[in-house]
Image (tube, rainbow, N blue to C red; front, side):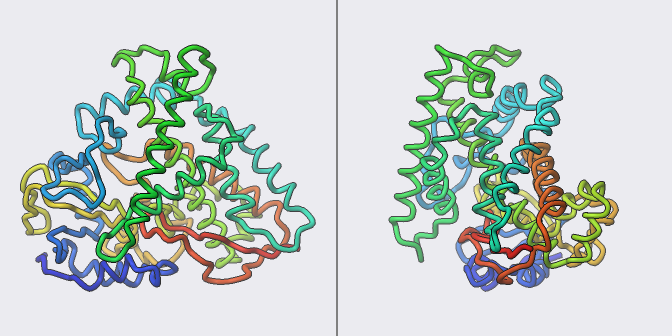
Length: 404
C-alpha cells in the first residue's frame, strides 16, 4: 500500500452536510489507508492499519508529544488517563477501575440491571398517551444521565448545569481556527473550567462525608497504587461523567433509528429478546457512537502500510471507517445481528479500550429491548433526522417518532 496526499475527502467528512451518512466518504478514504493531509497530519481509515496502530506502543495519547500543539489545547497538569501513556495511564486506569469493574468490583454493572430496567420503564410510562415523542430528549438522554449521576454521586438535580457545560465541551472538540469563530473555543474552555470547579466541590465534600459512590471511593480509598490526588479525581470524574452519558445517548438513539429503518429486525427482536446482545454488538460496528479519535501523536517514527509517519505527527483514527472495511467484514454496509466474528472498533481497541464499555452495552441492551417491547407501532417522523454537530461523537440531535 502507498500513501498519497488526499486533501479533499477529510474536510467533506467533517463538514456537517455529511453527518447523516458519512459512510460513502469513508469508503473513498479507505482507498488510501494512510492519508497525509495538507497540515502534515495523517488520517488512518482501514481496519488492519487502525488495529495495528491502536496496539502500537509508539502511538502516544499525550498531547505533549505532538510537534505542533492543537488549536486551543493548553497543557493540562492533570489530564484524564485517556490522555496519558503507560506507565502513568495504566496506574491511573487501575485506580479508577478498582471501583468500577473486575476484578475488584465484578458485580457492580450487572447488579444495576434491576434499577436500570426500572428507570427505563419509568421513562416509557411517561410516554404513554403521547402521539409523538423525541427519542433523544424523552428517553435516550435522561436514562444514561440518571445512571452515571447515581454511580459517580453527582446530584441528579444538577443535571441542567452540567448539561450546558458538556454541550459546550463537545462542541469545542473539533474546533478549527480556520473556519470556526473563536467564541466556540472560548465557551468550551470556560465550560471545562466551570465543570472542574463544580466537581472539585463534590470531591471536597466526599472527604468529610463519604458515601457509597465512586467519587467517595476515589477520595477515600487507598489501593495497591495509592490514592489519586484531588486534581486526578476531578480529571477522572470529568472523563467518566462526559463519556458515561454522551456516547450512550448516541448508541441508544442510533439503535432505535436503525431498527425503525429495519422493521423486520424490530419485529424479530420483539419475538426473540435474546437477540439483543448480538444486535448491540452489530450496532457498535454499523452505527457506532464514536466515529473518530481526533488525534494521537507519534512517539517516534512509525511505519504503517509502507508509510513512515514522522515523530511528533498528529494522527487521526477513523474508527467507524475501520468497522465498515470490506477487507475485514463481509458485506459491511448491511446491518446483520447474526454476523459472526464481529471484532468491531466501536469501543476502540488496545490499552485505551473503552473503560465504560460493559456499562454502555448493558444500558443499550435494556433501553432498546424495553423500547421495542413497550412502544406501540413506532414510526419515524423524518429520515434522516437532524444530527448533532460533532463528526466525532456522531448521533441524532433529535429523533421524532410517532407511536400508536
